[in-house]
Amino acid sequence: EIQLVQSGGGLVQPGGSLRLSCAASGSPLNDHYMDWVRQAPGKGPEWVGRIRNRARAYTTEYAASVKGRFSISRDDSSNSVYLEMRSLKIEDTAVYYCASEFRDISDYYYFDNWGQGTLVTVSS
Amino acid sequence: DIQMTQSPSSLSASVGGSVTITCRASQAINNHLAWFQQKPGKAPKSLIYAVSSLQNGVPSKFSGSGSGTDFTLTISSLQPEDFATYYCQQYDTYPLNFGGGTKVEI
Image (tube, rainbow over all chains, first blue to last red; front, side):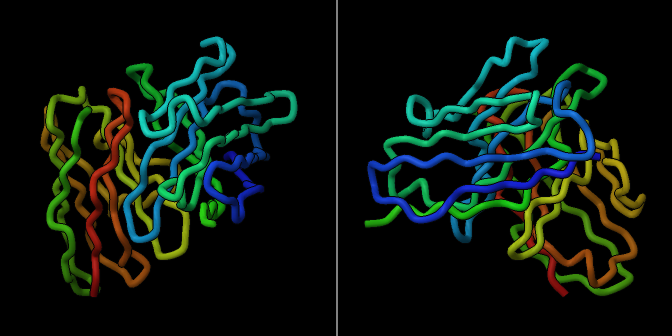
């Protein structure tokens, strides 16, 4: 089973940038898709974006609310995934989780393991 | 976008009892439906994928069913550790939306 440990996060001013990291252990990430999900205070989870595996050319998808501002990357050699956030807005304030995905029998990917979460606060 | 609607938003139950939570998708999601448990201050925990398949290590007291646009999560033999908020999520179409959550309280 994959264990995901996150780092990064903290307080940043509106318009600023921040990079979150997610390091995996226990199993290689190679076959997994990796996602970022956020949760604003008192709200439900919101999907942020996904990066596919090498077999799918590491392509990415993003929620409309972050497209053009956030970027997901991965380094399978170090078993890590990253979320680069730019032009941050107050409404980006949330706990951010990384999550691994695996294939179901229909070849669609579902969430299996989650990181512990890291708080990002956007405030002046 | 596919909207996921859960009901009820909260419910009260007793230790030893059972509960059923409903999740409705705004359009067909081809059984690409997952359920998660979340406790306060903790990351979500994956329970079920593909409507009814249990994640590794999840006890059989959790069960999922449904098809098309209507799905349910049933939890039997409720224990104190089962009191939490439960979310459904569709992974058929972007964006991968979650339901609004159901808080299961004592």
